[in-house]
Image (cartoon, rainbow, N blue to C red):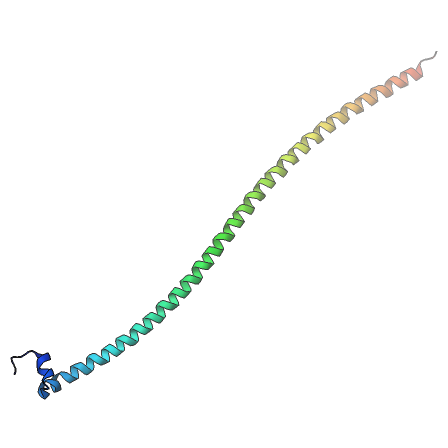
Length: 124
């Protein structure tokens, strides 16, 4: 019987072979149980990672949308500041022209006042 393969001998109920293989089978079964427990723990860990990754992806997507909104608002604000600057520049130019016109008007009024005084000084 020793020339036959071990599975055949085990099937025949050879107690020597069964006794000899039994400790190995028990160790293999225990290792299989530990492997199964480890596989379940890894599956749970993968589930946790997947859940956190999903939450992170949603957060990134939300942040991305908010960044687009901030960028658009910043662009609009930049255009508004440029427009205000342009209008302030135009208002400054109008004010300078008004001062120039006031100076010219003042000189004209002084000239008219002098002319009026000369007219008043003349005797008819």
